[in-house]
Length: 453
Image (tube, rainbow, N blue to C red; front, side, top):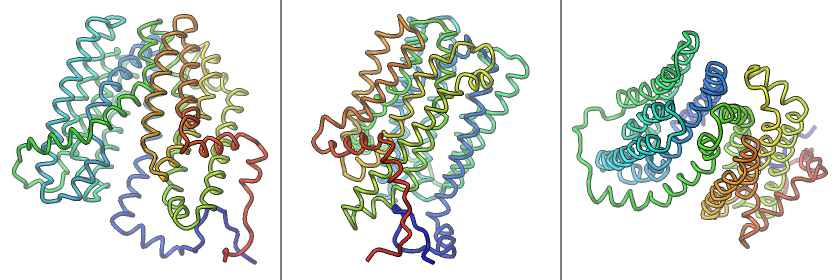
């Protein structure tokens, strides 16, 4: 009896022993540690969010979310591109100390500017005294970013175990510190310090466990600083646009509405985003195989990608339907009665899940087609739409208006932009066809035949 085989699977059979040998290689071990870290981080971050939501209540959680979002936007421009740095460290192993020192110098300068800018902004325009105090405290985490450049060396030398242990230890410390703050009834400032404590532990461990600890400290090189800054600038602009794209809604709510409304929206967004890891995990697992199929059989590659979008759309729409049916009751049980009124926000915000899923698939397609510039254009346009609609809708509709702005911006960035470029119109067609339920049925068919000739 022939073995059952999904159409997106490889044509060759990989034995358990072969897979085991692959996992025992340095690359395999690094991937294993990174996957484990991602799974642990998912649960740890969800637990921290729940502790903050229930421990602080809508008003204080709103202030906290405003401060975190504003700090995240500023912090998005303080870190260099990971792939760029790993590439440089791998190509120039003899210059790693100088490259790391130069990256640290750039990051230190950008972090200092970001901390100063945040302090001035909240001092002059902060919505309340709590935000004025909280933002500088959370911004202290940006001062640790120069140490975090050491993670690039871990990646270049395939030492994922040390880096993963460092980050997981920081997450664990933050979880227990937040639990202690919640149980003791501590004030908002202590919750911020509890969150910051994990970052301090991660930075300390990354420094303590770094490879080549015997090296004499090397000064940064001007030529390396100029080169890294020049190459990183477009990526920093994209990172800033991404920060605005994902976090501006909570910042504008904090400035334009009450802290309680910001808290209800931020808590709802956390719930709505719970399943966003699914398409990323799906893309990460299928990405290499799809790239291989593209090189071998272009027609099959197009067919496989059409099926991928069908899977993504079907799962996303299933989540949306279930949320519309049971979301408000489950949200109140998870968040507590203090968050009464989150239903209308959740019923709108959850529709953004569809565009998130389609957007992850689109990002995978653009990478395979060498159209990364489209991703940058999409992110910038999404950020502009998000800012404009938040400005128009928040004063009148509050959190519900912010949800509509988010939904529209995600739709523009993930789907709408693809109609503007000739190269991405086939992508738009695949995305739109994937919304038809009959396509889902065709996509899940299993090939019972043997290998293709």
